Each structure stands twice: as C-alpha cells, then as structure tokens.
Length: 127
Image (cartoon, rainbow, N blue to C red; front, top):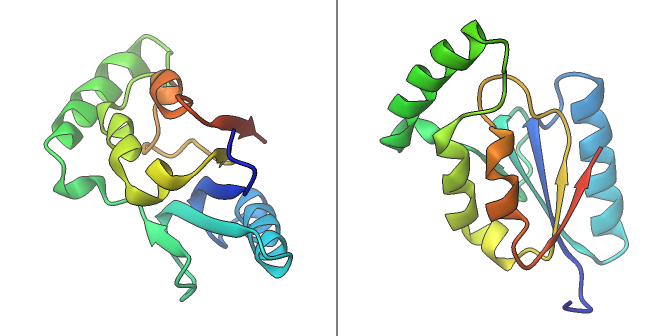
C-alpha cells in the first residue's frame, strides 16, 4: 500500500449531527498533521474546499436508487441497495485515496453493497 495516506471520509453531512462533526474533526486533524484528507458528503454545510457534495441527482443510477429504496424498505433491508453508490468509485478523490472512512452512511445516499467495489486497492475504516 502507498506509504502516503490519502484519506476520503464519506458521511451524510460535514457538520450537521454528532457523527458529522466527529468526521469533520478527524478530517481537520489529519490535515493539520499534513495528511491529505477530503470529505464526500450528501449535505455540504461548510465552505471547506476539501469537502465535496455527493451529487447523485446527475446520475441515471439515481432512478435505481428510488426503485431500490422502495423495494428494500418494504423488506426491511434499508441501506442495502443504492446503485448510485457504485458511482463513488469514479470520483477522482476516491480513485486517489488509499483509505476510505465511513461515518453516518444512512440517509438514502449510500448502499453497503458498494463496499467491495470501493475497497479495491484501499482500506476501509467504518466508524
């Protein structure tokens, strides 16, 4: 594995809620130590240039998210199937990362079935 850590944090938000604030503190602390750290969030509330919004609205896979959410919620398998999550693997920050940290992944934006794709060539830390 690459000796220089390049970390991407995936979270529902960058500052709304306890988990988001924890994620942001870790992100900011890593940067203070000279480690490349970025955040991908569903709800961006800060002006931090190292935070980007996960915008699945532009993706055709978002239609699959709506259908999947309806079906899996009825079966009590929430957060299992959001096809647009697979698109995260194409984000340039994720492609450059060798560590992904997952925080608050509920909220209709992240499907856990994407973890095998996202973990290829990088470590996953799920907090």
